[in-house]
Image: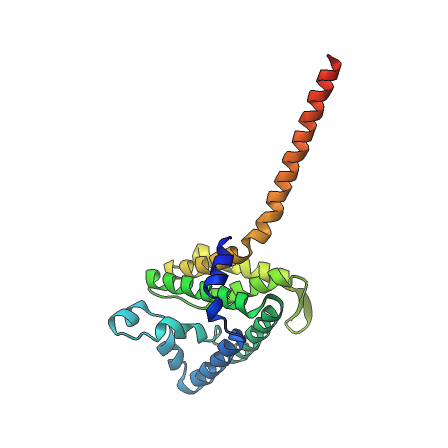
Length: 223
């Protein structure tokens, strides 16, 4: 049993159908609250190790997950609808148990990174979630800028470039958030990418062994 299967079994009792619908709906509420308060609400809900430990603002451990990932009102609405849509699609293909396990694993890793670095963000976790979508449905198309049809797998590569750029140029907190996002993706989907490579090497070794066997047989016959 690999690590992803163990995590799925561990979180089986915590399966939450429609989990991304709840997350997206809460994001929408916070988005409205930010418009009313001038983004004071997001600041009050963001992850801060110092506020959690010294001021006992324990809600920050989880509420940062529901903060919209964009400050632009238009793009906030688009991303909230987008997260709801991909969450629904992932759940229909992969099952709510797998989606819940993926998100909970990513959440735990992200929170752990936040306590080490002092701060964290939900952005890279949700970029990782789209990469999971692309791994499951690589040829599904999205309308970039509402005009250009682009396959999910290419958008996922773009997300990967964004995360690698943040990993290189970001501060410690950002680096840890990216590592958490990449790690959860590799736990659940790394085998799907490594397996073909491993099979290719096994096939290559098999061909080489067959060739060596033929050379040995030819040599014996020559004797």
